[in-house]
Image 1 (cartoon, rainbow, N blue to C red):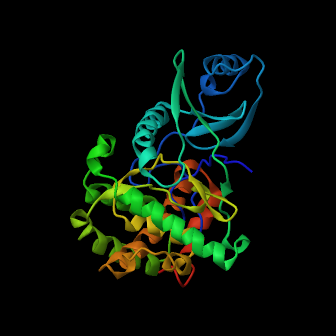
Image 2: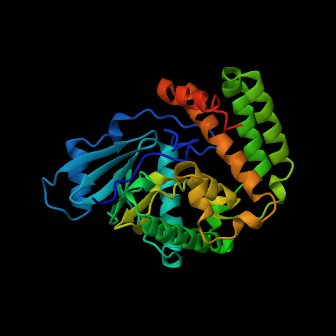
Length: 318
């Protein structure tokens, strides 16, 4: 099975939230303008732009908050659903072009195209399928995958920041304080007083140190849906729309949210020995279900909202 690009982002407490928004930014309007739908005329324009035969079929693979993803003649075509998503797509393409020769596993070779006033991206499929569970892997394969993922993150986090001017980034405290304000208004009223008290304390502790943390190039959504495996080994990593500068612990927290702390502990990286790294991983994982709640409230997604609230009823989360 080949890669199907997922329309998800930052992982939730166990897997990933349904939202496509950047958790440190502002929500986007998920409405689909009619002119961005893949009607027959637009499909004809796309196939002509890509040099494909007339009548090439298109299959919808995913419909998310920011993008539609189609298979068009064996290529993955992403259609932004609003102007912000168009800008993010062009930014992602520039970032991927820099990262591709520096990373040990395949990543999308994203090409942004224009047809009239409409923008879309295209890239070949990457071999492999999203990693859904470790249960499909033998112990030996799990050790090999842990080594692969550790090597990928080491290489990504070592990319010189100066190579990626698109990732200028604001002060972490400003972005995280904005997230806290949104949680105070929309998420905390839905949680128990005990949970809110602990979350406020966690935000206070993190905000006191976050601006002093080293900043590296992050994937930003290093969850299971964006990790492709083939025959038990890492075959590719997709969806760099959340790529930004930040704390390396965020990518490890995303991975641990999907595969568990025990798996992350087998990775060859010595991150666990650094002071405060584990504490920050725990904090980031607390924010993942908060993002689910925010998405659920802001976009009327009851299922995602319920999942986020329920996460804080688990005794091991707080």
